[in-house]
Amino acid sequence: MGALLEVEDLYFRYHDGTPALNGISLSIDRGEKVAILGPNGAGKSTLLLHFNGIYLAQQGKVRVAGEEITRDNETRLREKVGMVFQDPDDQVFSPTVWDDVAFGPLNQGLDRKEIEERVFQALQAVDMWDLRSRAPHHLSHLSYGQKKRVAIAGVIAMNPEVIVLDEPTAFLDPAGQESLMEILAELYQRGKTIIIATHDVDMAAEWADKVIILKGGKILAQGDTMLLVQDTLVKDAGLRFPVVSQVFQRIPSLVVRPLPRTVDEAANAIATLLPDRKEKDNHRIVS
Amino acid sequence: MEQAHIHLDEFARLKSLFHQFDPRVKIVCCLILLVIVVSLRTLAGLLFALLFTSLMIFGSHLPLGRILKRLGFVVPMLVALCLFLPFARPGTPVFKVPLGLFTLTYSWDGLQASAIFFLRLLCGALIVILVTFTTPFHVLLRSLADLQVPLIFIQLIQFTLRYFFVLYDEVIRMFRARRARNFKPARNFWCGRTFSTLGGLLGLLFIRSYERGERVYHAMLARGFQGEIRVLEQFQVYPRDLLLGMSLIVLGVLSLIIDRGGWGWAHFLR
Image (tube, rainbow over all chains, first blue to last red; front, side, top):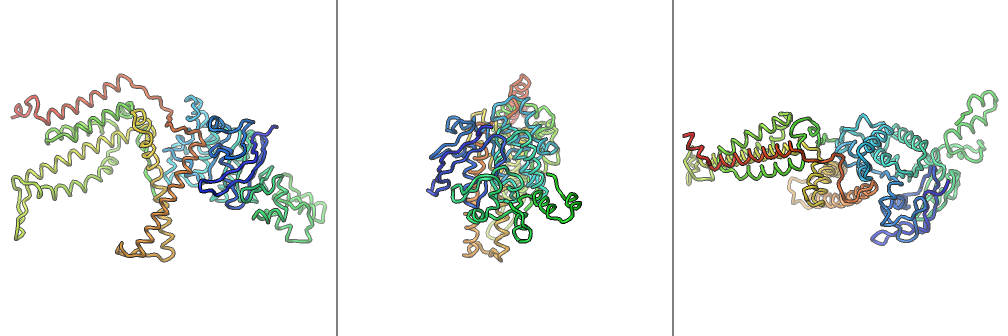
């Protein structure tokens, strides 16, 4: 598995001179699930916009499959990196769901049959095929969660290798979040590399292979989800421990190290602490 | 606020001659018809135009109820015209209203002028309804682009329609947030507090719209947008499109001839 996305010493300032990214370097391999975490204003969204070539590096380099993103190749490379924006109203603008999902494939210059097939597959993947004739601007036609799914379908239809999602669970109800996680799992199964920017530490702990923690436009740390239970790092980053980890942290008698980060890990840890062997086996969770 | 927003393409997928009409030829022909209709000067010409525009609407299988509802916007104008224009135009009196110092005369010529104005408006509205109701919105925009309408203008239409309701909801939310903190607009707009609060709200709306515009544009770029509107439908002008287009223009020209009393038809009727 080679690096699919590489960022090398990336700097970016907004027009008004506000620095957003200060020397970011990272590498994301094919087939990874990456969560980029950090407080508001850490530079998460700005970094994501570089992955898709919306912002070009002012200093440093961003490479997709070994090719540096420049003004000349940005359109072609956008087909490899699909981006789902935080607010679906920013992304879903066509008169109907079908038209909106077809927007990307049309811009790719695909033929009619291929476009129809891609739109069908994408809408099936997010379970929105039955609502394909609905109007996204019609509030009684689509809920916020459904619009979010349409936005994801719009990106899936372009068949990118990498799917980048900015705050995918923001403003979604628990059922919507669960449905979104199922969609992401399905995409991962299909071999997509998935990158999300989020505040949601619990979701990152449950889902990601790799976490990248940003603050003030700099990377504080990157590695596996163990980083999310490192006391000093989490405090520095303005984050918190995952809820399940907090439970073990607050009961001193539950000496479990490393701290569990996911529900499954917590359940297994509790099961091993149970006195009776039979009871342990009954409660052991197999992930 | 949850609003029942309009669905732009509600009737655009029906099956009729006008739905299958090449959109570019349809736009051009209807534009020519529109120019002809607004240049008609007599009731006879306009009644003929109303007859064929109504037949066109009938032939397009559009639901009559919805057409009448849309035409409801024209009715207040008709009432205002019939009430006031005949008083403003001299001519054969229908009745007089003595008001002491002066007398208002409701003239037959004025009534006729308001009827002409109304019929022009009605025919124009029917033609516009025919085009917009029988053509999917994105196809309409693509056709305008094909007809060399500047892209910036087309995008303005597209995004104004798409985001009007989003911004409207934003205004409602902002207004509600102010009311939640006991803001009550004064009856007089010139009240300093009301003026500054509403001014601030408008300013904020402009900033938010600008920011949203940026985000929407980024989202479009992210899906490969390069400044060109693409649609799946392949446009091709068939002989039947030209035939239909020619027929519409012939009808328009016919109404113009009737309007100008050509071929001595008025004399013949006498």
